[in-house]
Length: 280
Image (tube, rainbow, N blue to C red; front, side, top):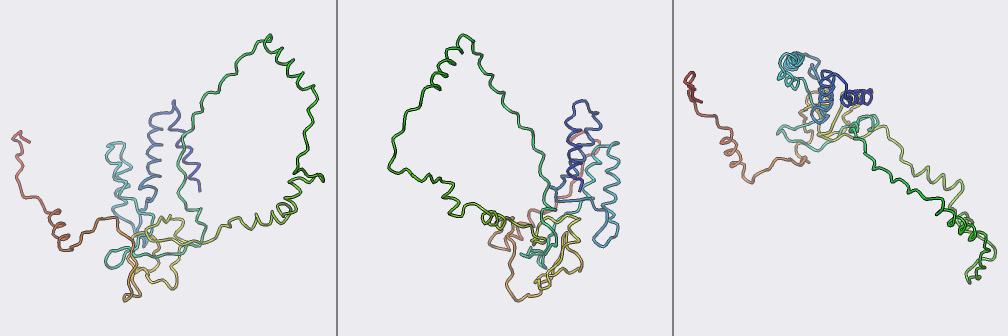
């Protein structure tokens, strides 16, 4: 709830010229933690079952000592967990599914990025006019204003009754209470629930509002899980599956894929390093 206020405070410290260098450094690190993983991860020291996550705790402990050795700051990545719904089937493929969220979608949207102030172009200064030049112009303008206007000829399409366009609009239903009622009907009303698809951002505060549909084809193997990497069970294995497209390139022959993968992951040959010889 305080993310906007906290972000403004960090940005103000970073932009202040006379701020302490250590304070600026801390603000930059804090902004990096808030934006880690494209704003799709959060710090979590426990597993989904509530047990302590040993690698995450070790990473956080080492991160707190980064002032003694700066590379220790990178160990914080061990404490990150994805804030998303990533459901996979038995083949580790991502099926096309949806989970209901009983809350407003705007509460969990990405926070807006900090916009840099737009530098306005300098305004043009008005040219000074001498009084000797302005007086003849003022006299000419006053004479033109005092002259009577020329009578305009009556046109064939003029309205002798004096009806105006406003009268015509009102007669046609353009004004009045009916128009305002139509505008109110056209407004979009925020719904209290929305569907969350697979591989979609799910924040920790959003998890308590997530519910699997009762008639869902895919259900999590571990009941009670609504976010993170989940293995789901297909309740209709005989029907064709609707899978999300993969971003990885796929070859035609699976055998060639396996052979190429084994060749790419081949271990290096054993070798002896010449310690103390002075050669690289």
